Length: 243
Image (cartoon, rainbow, N blue to C red; front, side, top):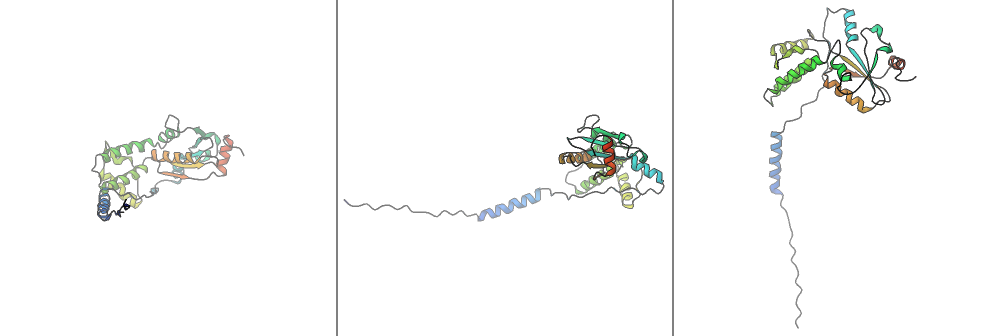
């Protein structure tokens, strides 16, 4: 009986040609470059004081005191605020008040929005009017975006009269813009300056939350600072910390 030859399977080399994909990738890259809006550059806006040569030294000192709020972040998610109307009262622990987080009545947001001397609610209302105007404008206009950003800075500084009934007063806007460049701003509503002072045993999450509150309440002037000896005297006197 004749011996059959074993059949050998012919191996085929499989090769995928990716050359056409190069053109496809270039088309996709071009598509996304043309259709995707680029990220706006992030900038830190500095709120500078207006030059008011007619303001007396006593008025300047008063405005610095009664428009300043100090917030202490303590352990166990506790939060306190300290407010005095005159510099002579500073250091008295009786003016230290414990508050809560959130947006309920008596919370820190409520304190900021309804401050007796410089309520941030006025600024928030002006921003809402600015949002109404901006929502009705054509999208993708970089000039309008720039106007919106600058108008928001003006509102944070106390220029709440640039928008009304959902409309932007262009003449007033240009006037304030010129005054800001020359350092001759006037007719601003009082705005709060906030000192944020985290204690050593406070949490980082609380610090992030209070910074969010600064943005929500349109606080344009705030600083994160260390607790000094005077602060410790106030906190010890109020029983928040021990020596």
